[in-house]
Image (cartoon, rainbow, N blue to C red; front, side, top):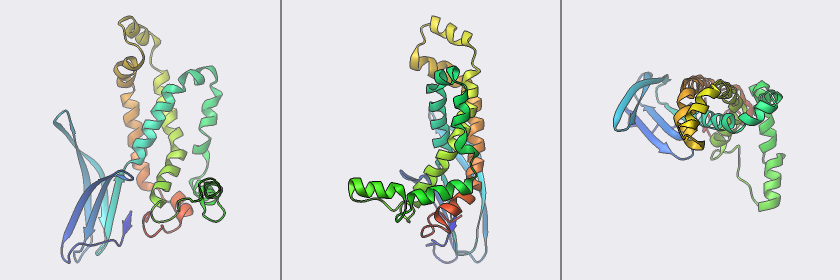
Length: 239
């Protein structure tokens, strides 16, 4: 997203990479040059003391006198939650396969309607959630205000598109041959060890594909944000 929050000195560029609990990894690029800036983003990950990468993440433009913000959190949440649901709900899906179609319902709703629905639910004057929070606790946060708008948008996007991750990861989990699990069980693998050393490595390609698709989609979010918070609560969700 882009916003006018540019504090760099005239004629300079300023890059800042921050780790925030509410946002995740946040990159801020401030452009105070006399012309626009276009840059490519890359990530180098350190695993076991060794660098892996660089991996390309995005190509962004920053107009003169403006600042650009990038964050990486939402796809990770969707993949992790989708993986947990795929594993824990696998026995239930095996007995009642029709429940998979039921879990896909949020993904079938138009994003603009999802944003409008949550706008009505979370609205400080007519919303059901603020009403009950006020009735029970005597106060409620401004979900669509500047401080909470970004978190609200991440939660709404996650609720709608986690079923996508669930669908792919459940298919991958169900495709693992029972013979592989039985052989691992004979060698003493049970519970968490079976999942970590057998199931998870076999699911890594599906996990990578799911994350990659949702990572790309997270840069194209517009319609549900526009109907949820309008032009942005104080610029916190400007796109």
